[in-house]
Image 1 (cartoon, rainbow, N blue to C red):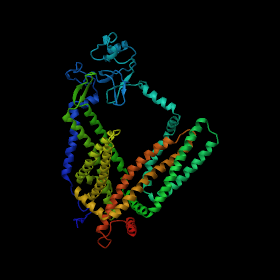
Image 2 (cartoon, rainbow, N blue to C red):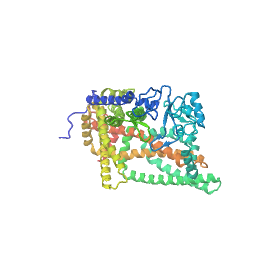
Image 3 (tube, rainbow, N blue to C red):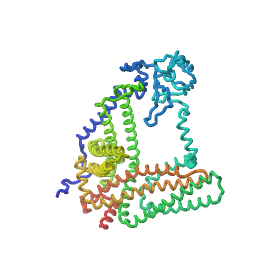
Image 4 (cartoon, one colour):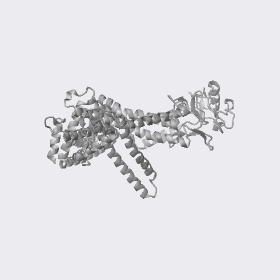
Length: 615
């Protein structure tokens, strides 16, 4: 049969290197990324970003070469190490830059300079000329061009920024127009004013609830069955009780005018929360009633996954180190991108006389290479997490005597992945990259078509984006199972993907049962964690009912709790998928007879019996 697998699965019997050519390709690609970082360093782009440069192409703190057509270029700025802006408060928020002539100076003014005479004295005393280079300090007070070539008066005191040598005003009143507009908006909006004051009054509670969300996420995730059924009913009842209690307090007229406004806002918020919780609880109970067998089947598998976390507690930390690796890589990527922005050939703007840097056409492909690197390496880091989890869970599942599990199964899995399977991760992540890049390009094109008259083109682009998104999700699911197959058999990516696909096809009904209900239950888990955190927030904020508006503090806490729940439950979902593939392999090659005993434990055996009874 074409669907018949040609080889047997041999869990953990041998380990060998997989997809070595792809490891070589990925290594060469990473070397290319390093070369892109080295290019702006070698050509001076990195120095211009770090040390700063003036409007005439001179890098501060360096001896510069002459730029043709720019008379004030090519100056020795060895002693002038700071960038000074003639009008630092002239901000261009759209282009995210300061619209001002920049100069290299030897010292930032530490005191306010009120007159041109003060500018002259500062230059003569400190050797730091704050006007353009063609205007000597002795002409500051008499030149007819002083209004355009000298800084706008009064010059605010400034100091250099750590690492980046820019003279930034120390007095935030420099940006009064923006601060004034914001404060006017806040003062004119009494509701917003009360909300902001509520956040400031309850900042300690917000921090405490965020810490609570980090603590309750693993506990709630391992107790789906009880908490999904009981918590919504209890939480809804308590919310309605709070609403009635606060409503009575509001009608008693015992609070101040400001307290009455706050109490009124809280009553409205509680009514909204109580109605939302009631609707959610009713829908949840109806779904669980009509899908009770499927939900019970999925939850039984989740109980087994919870036992895996008991034996492998370090799995909980996987999202944190993955997030840390991604953050470090993204910081490096953004830094190199900024380096590239100041790399290239100096170009003079004929209308303003300001010099900028543009990369020649053939070298602009470096930016695109850098963008591809962002996607590929990010996907590689995520794939490494999936392979690490798969390796640890596979070791747990296919070890009959659980006492013989390695002392550090997570670290052992990471070491195994680094030694044998980095090429497989490179290939799998590259496939996702190939789908994600055109989807992102089409998404950008669709955003550019908004407001255009060609509705047909927008619809076609949107349809293509949706198709690519679906393809990406399917490939991501297949990749994850391929990594599990690689962890079991130590086979190449294509072989593992084929074997995993065949075993999933043979268990299509089981896959449908797990995926359809499993995603729903995981979503309920996220809502449950958010609800528990919000409920704790309502209890804590109840003691500040007279002067705290609850809306924004609870919203901040709920968003944080949802992000934490999503990170943890993504690992939980990964564990469930790995367990299911191991379970499918186990039931295919073993039948419980002597010599072919199941690897699964009693809890998973009960899941298998439950599923067979549902057929």
